[in-house]
Length: 244
Image (cartoon, rainbow, N blue to C red; front, side, top):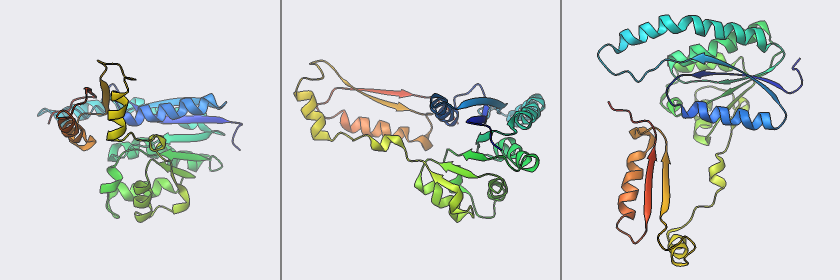
């Protein structure tokens, strides 16, 4: 039996920026503001940004260092999770699937009456094959959870193709889609009206890791096009730069 409005959240943290972690924490803040009691257990994540020749050695050292903390986080998850709604932000790398997925399997084994939700972010799933290790492991994990939330319809469709029951997959629409986009003509009219001020510029913010997969190159190309028009702009890129 689930205790009244109690959630135990489990997710990985590290010293590097993670949009997935930030998004999950914002969700937890929203849930907490609605009267739910939210408890958090963090498990350590690898720093996978190391690119030098000793990268594999570095990861091995991290594994030896972090393994006791990971095991301890699993113990706390099982100890404090009984009777609570379990919410897990599941990473999509092989290591993350084991790190955050195994507690779900163990929790279902010891407390089958518990309800659990998996939160997914990222596009790694789009590159999974039906018989890949990641897919097989995820299908196993999904059998022990009640719902899987995804931020896009394409991700939901991909999970269904990979063999996840449609009834378990919940598409959470991006709230930014509810914001009406401003057209180019509306932008000119706003500047011409003087509501921005004579010398005011429009700030365009790109907030994400500065890697090609996140689309910052397209952002720069768009700014280049706008720079040839009579519009005052401040282009701001805010994110971690990853070289290599």
